[in-house]
Length: 401
Ligand code: ADP
Ligand code: MG
Ligand code: MG
Ligand code: MG
Image 1 (cartoon, rainbow, N blue to C red):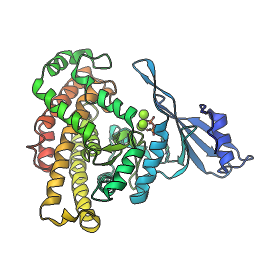
Image 2 (spheres, rainbow, N blue to C red):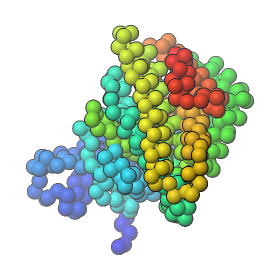
Image 3 (tube, rainbow, N blue to C red):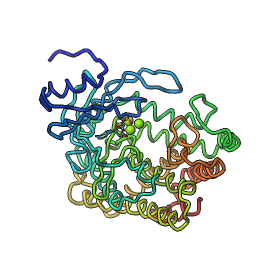
Image 4 (cartoon, rainbow, N blue to C red):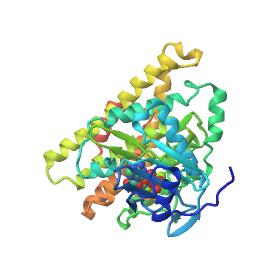
């Protein structure tokens, strides 16, 4: 097949694209909207009024808007995202959207429409609780991370897969925006005036910076398994009964702990931000307890599912050694805690923020929340080898706001 010329879709050509695929017919009446956040990708939502069927087309744009400028950014990320969704569907099909079509030339994916669900970040900001999200994400993490590691597949297969998912440009975004820039006086940073004294203190904090440097090195070198790479609460659709993980365009062979840390960090930031969202103190406590519970359950489900897979499916002959799986999980835990801290600090100081905190109206409460998040992030990074288990994490979080 000859390579097609890349061009940006619009609402008209998005519909023609589905007609060409045979997913809708020429005479069907359709409504279309572009619903993406507009920084990196288009997301077209197409509904056939005739049949009631609907689709999502996500298309990568050849540039990213960073600090008001446009930077070229590889279109290959569309292939990586669609492939990672398909890889996850091999083990947890119920937890990812179906991929109907990948077009690497146009850098687009046609996938299942999940508009009946809510983005977890938005749901949590609104004060909702999702009873199954911990179980689902714990399972998602265990199954996706175990299966593509050298415990789940042979080292040759893992090395080949790692080449397929080589993702240097998107990794660089994380290396810079998460692990480097927030710790230096760098123009990509983006923090509120009132945080300046705390940020200047952090730039002088050599003890912290050395630990962040080590975590950055882990991110750069620890090629353990195929990770999602951007598993914040904006990448998760939820309802009372369903959970779906989207947006794995940052996927690559990285450390086990990175996705776990991303998820935990975003739960913790929402929990602390509830100080500025919930007026009623009983309701606030209820929500915060729910979030602490979700943290605990996610880790518990992750470890129990991981151990089950280890027993049933490990291809590593040493895996029968007593205590080995526990030591592997301890390493994952310590890395995850470090990444949790890094993800928290970068959302307060670096380029990309979280709405959970930014939408707090009172500047006074915002400052308090931002400071608590930075201080807790620092503590998790420095004490990641002392915080022995998830209950200790829960009490550390409880003491931090
Ligand atoms: P980006 O990589 O630009 O962040 P996302 O994949 O996170 O793109 O999608 C951006 C937004 O588009 C989501 O927050 C959601 O509102 C919408 N969206 C993405 N995928 C779907 C889908 N499969 N079904 C419904 N809405 C979607
Ligand atoms: Mg986005
Ligand atoms: Mg996204
Ligand atoms: Mg994305």
